[in-house]
Image (cartoon, rainbow, N blue to C red; front, side, top):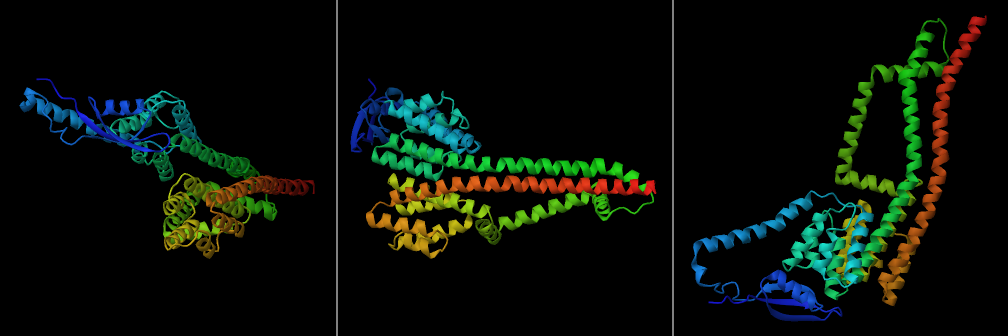
Length: 437
């Protein structure tokens, strides 16, 4: 008796976004997906037709060993995605530039006409720093089983954020996945660029600070004790600066454990304070109002808010969902709270600009541009203008901050080292003048 070919129902989209449905007589789900992609369609859902699961496989269908073997195969297949998911949970979160490179590579493959499963298979062989090949393998496995790409990505939260998943889902629903992936790549490249500029601005001051502190500690713990042996052997009253320096040196060498304990205790207290809701709010509020750094932090946060919300709205994500995702990725609790209140009021049918203004946190320029965008029906465009404005201003402020910090750090280090030299030399001069007398 010949075995009947299984039937699979499917729902897919054309490149134009039109939804089509149909039924295929193929060997398995993987073959159904390949057939759909050969038709030039993007698969959204593939399921076994009703009654297909109960179809008789042949005369040996009542064989217990056969049923056990089928059960074993199904169990192994169902365990495979879970094993992948456990691997993904151990995967570190990729950097923005790494995610941008991965996204751009996938967009290029899809744009060349490759079906999604073939493109994901190719991604497993491409070099993508920071994102292991297991990620692409897991995505391919999930898609081959009939799940959407966004659903597959949602099972890897350590790699793909809610922002990423929702934009991919919007691309699937609109039939413009390649365009959405390209926008995502551009989005992450912009953020990676801003992040890189911020880090570059802080590298030089940090190097100067670390080197200066290391020189002072070395002098206090190794060099000064040798001078102290000389000074202690002479019955001469030393200058106050030298006495202060010698007392500090004794603290470093004799009570270093107390200094270490005090440092650790202060760090623990600050960490616990920061981990509390009230403490985190106070610290984030202080950072927004801090001199020099505060303006840079505000510009970065406002630009990040505008850029993220604009990207989500441009790709068809509903405004409430877009606000929720934007709220999740903003690191500052004060700004998070303002966005959360805005989202609650937008639910009541209000515009975005009006509840944002109530927080008295966002600048007037952003609110005015948002109002214009709401009046003209182009909120994403207005947010893009806001993001461009604040990112350009952020670049200027970073240059100003670097210009101010570098000489300030050099002056502070020069004063510290100068005090050390003055304390030692003044004592030497006093000893020399006493001997001459």
